Image (cartoon, rainbow, N blue to C red; front, side, top):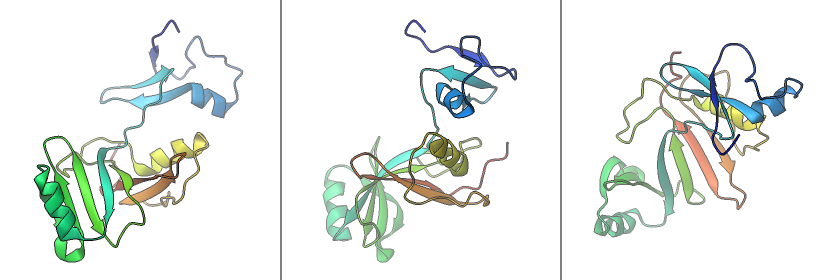
Amino acid sequence: MHGRARSWVVLGSTPPDVPHSLPPLELFKLTHYRRSRTRSTFTIGEMSMRLGNFSVSLAVKDLPRSRAFYEKLGFRAVFGDAASNWLILQNETCTVGLFQGMLEKNTLTFNPGWDRSGNTLPDFDDVRDIQKSLKGLGVPLAMQADESSTGPASLILLDPDGNPILIDQHAPRPGK
């Protein structure tokens, strides 16, 4: 591959330097789809999933105290309901969710279909498609999305150190 990934427009065939005799799962691991707005491509040598807007969700013990602390760091509340024990705070580049009594552990959170302001994107990777890809790669899931649904859904996986990763989609499945 000489250090660079090669891409081919999908024409219903396997890229020229991929062995045709590979089992389907191995072929998937070696080559995969990456959607763009105008075409689908196979990409060799890298993995791409559009997981959506990223934030850190913190399990806090005292919401007002935590909010005051993060406000001293330049964050401000942009969404949420303090009376219901949760707030979303942002600074120029970061998003932090504060959740009192809702999470067991601090959690990495991705929101497919949302931009940083919570606006729905016109095109994104649906959580059910992300789930199928993760399963195909042999990644165990702690909680699965209902694959027969089309509305909001979520899944949870754990990284190798046991840190929870929540993929939480609030938008309906995009029309393709």
